[in-house]
Amino acid sequence: MSGPNRIVLIGGGLASIAAIEALRNEGYEGGIMLISDESEMPYDRPPLSKTYLSAEVNLQQILLHDQAWYDDMKVELVLGVAAQRIDPTSHQVHLGDGRSVQYDRLLIATGARPRALPETVIELGVGVHYLRTRADADQLRTIVQPGARVVLIGGGVIGMETAATLALMGCQVKVLEGSDRIMARFFPPVLSERLARVHAKNGVDVRTGVVIERVFQEGNQSVVCLANGEVLSADILVVGIGVIPNAEIAMKAGIELEQNGVRTDSRGETSVPGIFASGDVATFPLPDGSMIRWENWTHARLHAAHVVRHMLDKDSEYNEQPWVWSDQYDLNIQVLGSSVSEDAPILRGCLDHGKLTALHISGGILVGATMINDGKSKSSARKLLGRAVSCELREQLADATLDLKKIVASL
Image 1 (tube, rainbow, N blue to C red):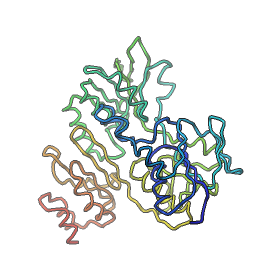
Image 2 (spheres, one colour; image 1 turned 120 degrees about the vertical axis):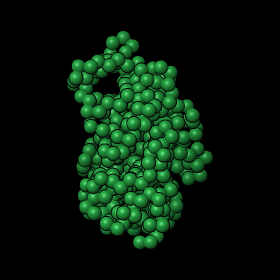
Image 3 (cartoon, rainbow, N blue to C red; image 1 turned 135 degrees about the vertical axis):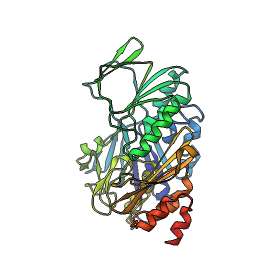
């Protein structure tokens, strides 16, 4: 087919892999180059805080594809080399090893990196661990041993997944969260409280509303000083307080940013024609025109495929709802749509009995659902998104003895 002769992808994460798949599925026969500053072939990141950290799986088992797949797809892999600069005028990407590569279309899929503790809080020389790459997980895994005292700063998804894994590996884990509850971006208060109870039953000391004043190193111990005067010593210090988009290469090229990410239009194209962005690094418009940046596995995959169709001058719309999941202990947690709602959620089931689904309503509209060990309800919940919830429907949804699938079918 006609179109660009060479497409270059910067970043070795899921968005780039999804872009390769979409390019070939759409019939693109031109050259594809993937540039990644990591030396390994692209791998799946969700297992890093779970089964990879616990050594239940190895690197080969989390690779997104093997070398044969890249050969079949005719992809040129440039691994262990950073893309340092984009020259939009000459359509070139300058690499850290001195090479320059030409592109006709460029995809920035550089992802994000862990947010560090402020320098005003943490002193130089503290042995702190972050968890974003395979190397991060390997480094942490080598020092974990039963009985190790772990202080984990951050009660979001990565923090709580890591806390669960380390607890199951025999560590004594304390979680310090600055807000008034854990996983506040994804859970309403009632579910945050119930998840905190599960962690407590597994020996994790979860503390919320914590203010950290100082972190320093004392011998082989990391010391965390809290505003309430308490001093905590840790054999292992882990920080998981969010991420920062890797947007510097775009900014240096004169590409517009928004919400710290690379601003794109509905097509995924940046302010510079021919340069697109997708995944964690990209800020994109929702159907209502508001701009957002999503950090989740499903979005990275689906948005990249959408962007690729526009790179090839084809039509595509992106109206996906966010869907994220987390595995903690024996709990599989899935969040569909928005869990931020004006009303108290409708709860179906009981976590103490093995499974629970919470339906989130805002302004009389069902805007999201959280399913804990109840993934089979996802398809039914998806069909309810955007639906007005009458008093009669609310009563039906609140009755856990009624099958959700049958309720949806009756509407």
